Length: 183
Ligand SMILES: [Zn+2]
Ligand SMILES: [Zn+2]
Image (tube, rainbow, N blue to C red; front, side, top):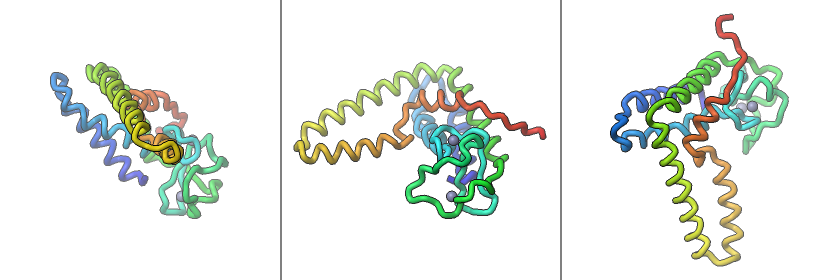
């Protein structure tokens, strides 16, 4: 995802968080949808973690980025990207450095807000629903088809959009960058 989209997502998260009414949990729902998107948009193409000390190509327009410490590793992109094969030409992406700092900060604010209690409840219900869906879909499908559908599920569970909201906050709080922005 390009940095402009990441920035827009971040702004939407901020706006949604700031307009939450703590007495009305229905106003949190939008935030729970946006947070996994933002988390996914800040994913390193090599390690899948939230990108730390982000680097990207200054020569290509593909907008892929990786952590400084991941440089030289294999990108997990499918199909692979021919634009940014030469990671030696990658440079620190200041815009993303700032964005990841902001993501870290907003995760901290949300985790320390009254919403946290509701997030745990939301994640618990979501996990329960997923389990129920799995049970009922296994009942309906014949064993032969089930093998196929298991495979499909593995792929979809790789998607970070299926991540628990609390895990998004943890991922954001885990980021420790070592870039000095004042320099
Ligand atoms: Zn990485
Ligand atoms: Zn690329």
